[in-house]
Length: 181
View 1 (spheres, rainbow, N blue to C red):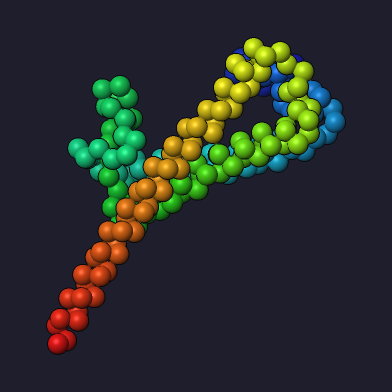
View 2: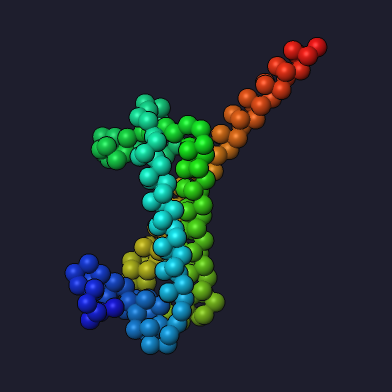
């Protein structure tokens, strides 16, 4: 919060955000509203999940020339955007953790928007149109659009892996059947 010993210089922009969205400002703090603290607890879990996903990718991923869904161009993202492939259980765990974290991000953001709607826009209704669009809708919309795309990509990877595993299982089963005949 503005005036706190951790506020400046890192969290200074949140002073402005707290005036746009009172859930993150003095109004909620003074009312002892627990929603922000509860959301922060889930943010910690979500951040750990994203960190674990990145750890798996950079610990077990092998450089790959194959471009998967959503792969960035190395020319624009450097070594961080290098395509990596992870096989086996580690790949499955990475995709599942990534899917869960991105679904969590979208769900929390939608919950927050629905909380505003159901409260009659109690925390953001005081804003003018410009402030609402550029300081609340667009920033929060990014937390819906980007993780939704991530959810789609991770789900496609999981479905593709299940389809491949199913084909391998079917061919193995049919191979065993032929051997016994």
